[in-house]
Image (cartoon, rainbow, N blue to C red; front, side, top):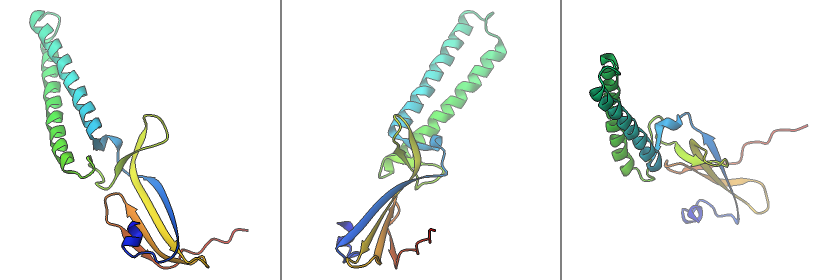
Length: 164
C-alpha cells in the first residue's frame, strides 16, 4: 500500500521479498531495554558480592590481604564506571524511535532468529518490484532498510545468469 500511495507502482503485479543480513556489529554493542536491564542487574550483583567480601575483610582482617582489598575496591570502581556508561546508553536508547541502539553500526538492529533465545544484529532488507502483467520487465523497485530512508530503484532487473 505504501508503494501505491507513493505512486511507485502502476502495475497490477507486485513482488515483495525480505532478507536478514548480519551486520558487522558485536551483540554486546547492541542494546535493547531487556539487555540493558539484564546487564545492570549483573553489575549490581557484582557490587553486592564485592561488598560482602569487603565486610568479611573488616570482620576478619587476617583472612583477606590488604592487596586483595585494594583489588576489590578497584573492581568496584570499574563496575560503577560501567554502570554510569550504561545509564548514558539508556538515555540515548530512550530517544531512539525503536527503543534500541547499536554502538558500532547505528543502522543495525537486534532481530530474532529461528533458534529459541537466539538472535542476531543485522539488517532487515525489504524489496518490492512491480511487473507489467504481460512481461517480466521490472518497472520500479522499492527498498526499505532498517531506519534509513527508502531507496527507489528504477530500471530493469539485473540480467539472469545462463545456467547450463
